[in-house]
Length: 132
Image (cartoon, rainbow, N blue to C red; front, top):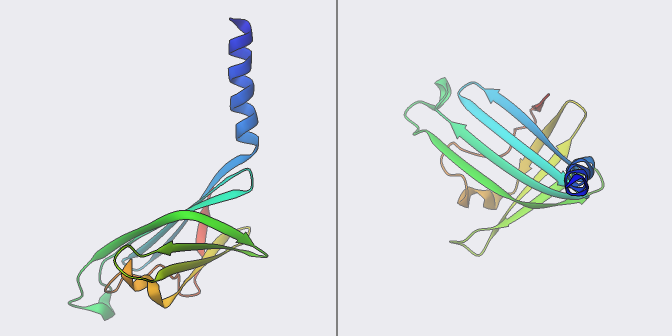
């Protein structure tokens, strides 16, 4: 019984050494961006969700929300999430540049299939703040 308990604890500790999740958040008026990056053994999973309500300069625009997630590839100084649209023959590509204090997100033009109206995944060169 002691061996099983020790083995279970060892597995928990060893897996947490190679795993980590970071959350990033940006509130820009009535626009909220949330980004979650999980790293397990040098493999990355990214989840980006947005909730937008119209700001003063976007009167009469409907509220919207969207989510995109999947495996991301680590490149030199960025993560790239490429997600295929189920309704179109296009891909949404998010480029995520992470710093010590936050992250910036850029999106390809084909992400409109995932986020319509005033919604967009791009942080517009603003930094999502890392939540500690």
